[in-house]
Length: 118
Image (cartoon, rainbow, N blue to C red; front, top):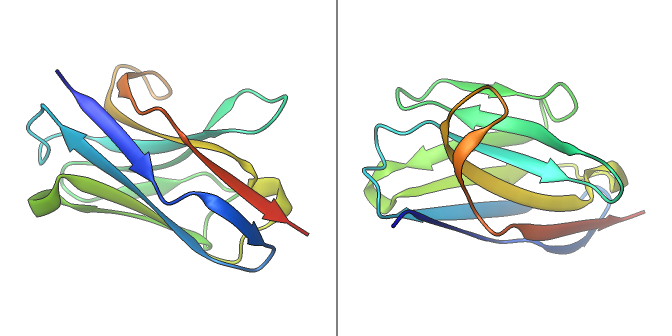
C-alpha cells in the first residue's frame, strides 16, 4: 500500500521560511513523478511544484523564485523549501505521486497546514 506522509507545516510570519517534507512508502520512489499542491480556505486545490523522476522541476508562477522542490531518492522523500512566505501562501499543502493528468495524481498525502501571518 502506497503511503505519503507530509510534515513541516506550522505558523510563521510573513517573510519567514519553512521546509515541508513528504515521505513515500510502498512504492519504488526513484521512478515516480512527485508534486506539491495546496488548498487555501475557500479556494480550489492548486498546483505548486513538480519534480520528475529525472530531476527536472516546474513551478506555479505564484511561487517561482521563492519555493524550491527537491527529492532525495535514498530517503524516499521530497521537500518543498519555502522562502519569503506571504499571507497568500496560507493553505493546506499536499504531496502527490504518480500523475494521471497534470492536476490529478494517483496517490495523495493527508496534508500539512501552513499559516502565514502578516
